[in-house]
Each structure stands twice: as C-alpha cells, then as structure tokens.
Image 1: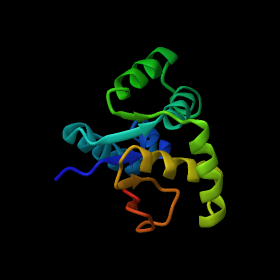
Image 2: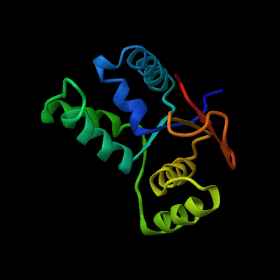
Image 3: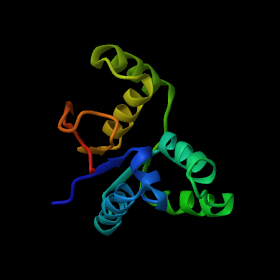
Image 4: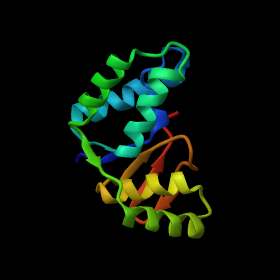
Length: 138
C-alpha cells in the first residue's frame, strides 16, 4: 500500500545539493521512491522555500531557469495551497505542540494534503500529530 508522504523543504533541497554528501544520497533515494509510487505531497510554502534555496543558498546553486523547471516538475505532485484558515490552525498548533509556527504550518499542510507521513529532519522522528507520523530519512 502506498502512503501519501509530505516532503519538507530540507529533504527536497538535499536531493539537489550535491555537496550534502550522505544526506544528498538518502534524500535522492527518498524523493525518487515518491516519484515511483506517485505518493509525494508538497505545499506552496515548501515550493517557495525550495526555489529560493536551490537557486541561491546551496554551495552550487541551480540557475533560476533550472529552479523553475523543477518547480514545474513538482507541481504534478499533490500540492497544498496555504490559506488563511490554515494559518490560524498553525498558530493554534504552534501553541499546543510547542513547535515553531513554520513547522506547524508544514504539519497542517501535510494533514490537509492527506499525508500520513512527513519526511523532515526538523522534528523528533516518530513524533505524531494525529494520524501524521514524522520520519527523518537520515
């Protein structure tokens, strides 16, 4: 059975950062499996952060054209648009779960996208938010 999996920005970025060593390899494998299973989920927030970082902040940035091509490619995944109600929900989760607002918004988007797994290195592996489980692929 295929599990819908939300990918946080850091995992997606490592998949394209050839200077990231073992994290690059593991992220490429994880993202590749999501392509094979057609089970990847992203949010507009992740795509925005990914574009900026992959074209400006990694040691060997991609061109803006390459970044745009990747964004266009990832739009074939389930993509969650962020709206005001989700922002309010994330603010409440931030307080309840004692996590950053941005992390809370990732959790809310993953839940709204129907994901049961969140790939990230920013949370404690195994932590759960309702039916959403956290997995650190590293």
